[in-house]
Image 1 (spheres, rainbow, N blue to C red):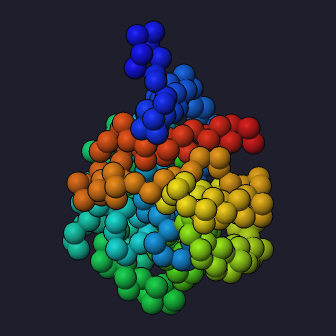
Image 2 (tube, rainbow, N blue to C red; image 1 turned 90 degrees about the vertical axis):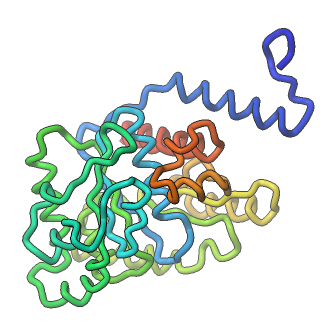
Image 3 (cartoon, one colour; image 1 turned 180 degrees about the vertical axis):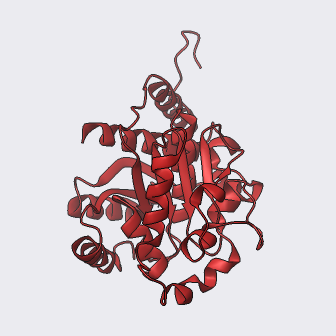
Length: 297
């Protein structure tokens, strides 16, 4: 920093620090609007390793940090979202499995995350791995999560502003339940060569769900993840996706970040693990964009 209080931006590191400082100050000056009704977003991409769970957890944490009441539903048998939010999800823990396969009420399985005051989670346990088979024989098998969630949102004492549903990397009955329960789909796309591979299949599946099971469903948001600005490939992928989906892609790019990768091993989101990191700042900016877009609709 110079004697006048401004940053000397003559080196790449100094420019990066100055940029992060400007972005952080801009965020601090923004009040995120709260939606008038609960926004239910399914985070989905049948391609694995694109950052679905990371995106779910960190957007939820970022919005909760801003004062919104946020519920995360972990619908992935691996339970990674439950781990990252620091909630119990051992085999005998009441979980989303008991809600969609059993007769449990959602209110009975919701846990408060230690991350932030208004952040809650419906955990997943290993029992969810067999749920696809068990759901086949159940009545209204595609509607079970929606029925439970709608009841919970109507009866909960304080209003919930956002619900994020973390899906498994497949298009099976669990993901269909998530699509039927949601009103919006958020698609994370990795900034790599095969980014658009399989996306058309996902979009066709969403159209089928919209036509036959949930006419309110729409793709509202695409978030580019694992961005490395040093490579021409990443820049080209972002340009291609924005050309195809100009109204859906957030302007925020989520960078490749050691801090983002480390945070779940400590049972935390990157928002609480390292608030000063570039990864944390990017998810805070993405959350602000999502909140602002919702207010404009």
